[in-house]
Amino acid sequence: MGRKKAALPGQLSDLDLRLLRVFRAVAESGGISAAELRLNLANSTISNYIADLESRLDMRLCERGRGGFSLTEQGRVVYEASNELFSAVDQFRSQINRSHQRLLGELHLACAEHLPGGPDSVMVKALRRFSELAPDVRVEISTLSSDDVTSAVLDKKADLGVTVLLQTFTELETLPLFDELMQLYCGEGHPLYGKAGVKTAELADYKFVESPRLMPGREVSPDVRLWNKQARAHHQEARAALILSGHYLGMLPEHMVRNWGYDQKLQPLLPERYSYANTYSAIHRRHPRNAEAVTLFCDCLLASV
Image 1: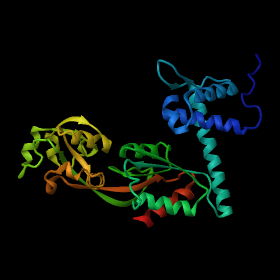
Image 2: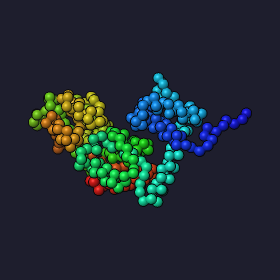
Image 3: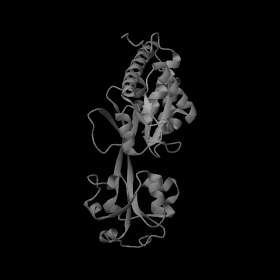
Image 4: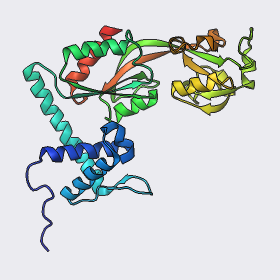
């Protein structure tokens, strides 16, 4: 029996690389629909690209349909091989960058939600400085929950993250930047709103919305274990909506409440007991792709604090 002909007998073309990039984005996003926003392409266009790549490789790369999305065994092989390929491309680009004394390529940032902030925020200042120093680098920014930022960097879906790190990871370099004050709030219409002399024991009679620091093992206080957590919202805007409804208590950043004009609708409770500081840090893998751009952005963050 003769051997099956090679799926890629010649050199890789620009089209091959484009199709592989689309495939990687779909694999990392967990499906074609989930990759639409990341790729800025329509569902049908992405489907056609995947089908074209499968035809060029003569492989079935993924299962997609009513049963959901999953990579085939061959799809997993192609995904891992494409990671190695683009890592080599990034290393090549970094070496060329160094020789030309300028930065090129891409920098994917993952930020905890609401971090970008206003014109005077650390992130905006760092982006301004970085864009002046590395104008040819293409910047992509994703806003995620704090835990998802860490996962994105660990999974190599983002080059650099700025988030609240609640545990250490040996794979990551960590650069502390600034603190954020968190407080326990109730909304207008809640029985505790406007009440003076609230006692800690009273809180157990009301519903709470869970946030990362109210989860088991992460509690800001032993009292949290007695609280009635009846809702879950790890994104701050969703959590604020529940608290503003007047039916839930929960934690929010003091600066966010003030900047959004919610300070007339929300009241901090027992700040001397339940307030705490979140430390935001820049995180990246020890050997990131496009390391020069990552290092430069970290320098820009430090200069902007």
